Length: 156
Image 1: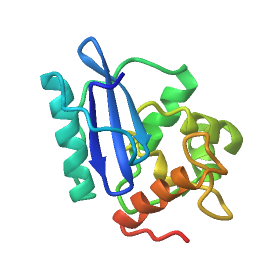
Image 2: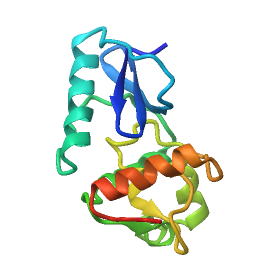
Image 3: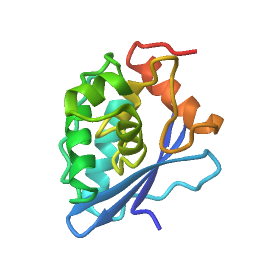
Image 4: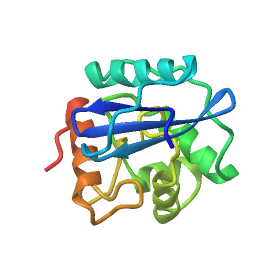
């Protein structure tokens, strides 16, 4: 169940809350029904996501649930520092956090807060890479391509 489901240029975005925090943001296909925000926080999250979808430079200020391992949170913090329009490879980010590319890729794929923590800005050294643990699924790669193009970074 989602606390809100909103339209996006690539499908839908689902928002789940837990207490007074955003618990998860999910990319959904266009076939999923919209859900009107059911709380002030769901409405605020939806508005901030809509602002980003209109203007890539828009930032986020949402209370995020304390989820993930210490390593994942370290990777997500580094990803959060990547500005719109800039991409790093998994290897570059791995060197930055003192790890290896595969572990960084796994942490990226486990990101509960895409858009807010912009894991789409991390790519493979030989192309776009996977997205949200869906390396072979076109829907998720198309979402990643749209997000990068929205930020001025086209990927075929």
